[in-house]
Amino acid sequence: MNNRPPNNDPYRDILHLPHPVSRRHPPMPLSDRAAQFLPFAALTGYDDALLETARLTDEQIHLDESCQLEINKRLLLLLDSLGRHPTVTITCFQPDAKKSGGAYITVTGTLKKIDQYDNSVLLTDGSKIRIEDILELDSDLFNTLDS
Image (cartoon, rainbow, N blue to C red):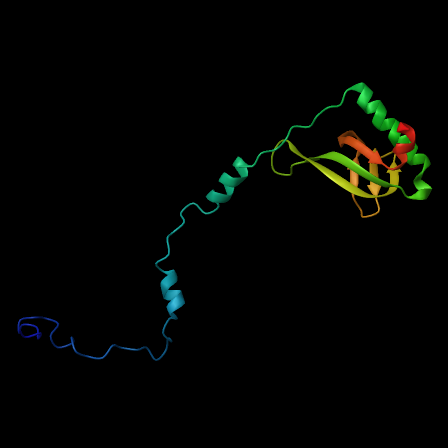
């Protein structure tokens, strides 16, 4: 069988010519050529938006009066002991930056200051915790209270 095209083929004269190579433009690297055939993401950011929507947040727990009084009593004891730089463990509510609600986190650090005007607790690492966001407050100083 003959592999030559029939005589009436309009491309017969160029079929066996070498492939043209541009002198002005270098050939595209294979990695870039492959990128042309990657799937097209028409909805850029859609997957991130789905993940953000699916992410769960907690609602802030509002303490009753007796729990607030206990936290205030502990804050006063810490205020009297600021010179000793007590170590505290605080469980507090951290509001979410993107949606309603937030998460409860536990922070441990050395107490630097209780700012009564700003209504916050400052730790030496720079953490600032609003007093109304505190759920639990613990320190070794409180062991003497409980005993």
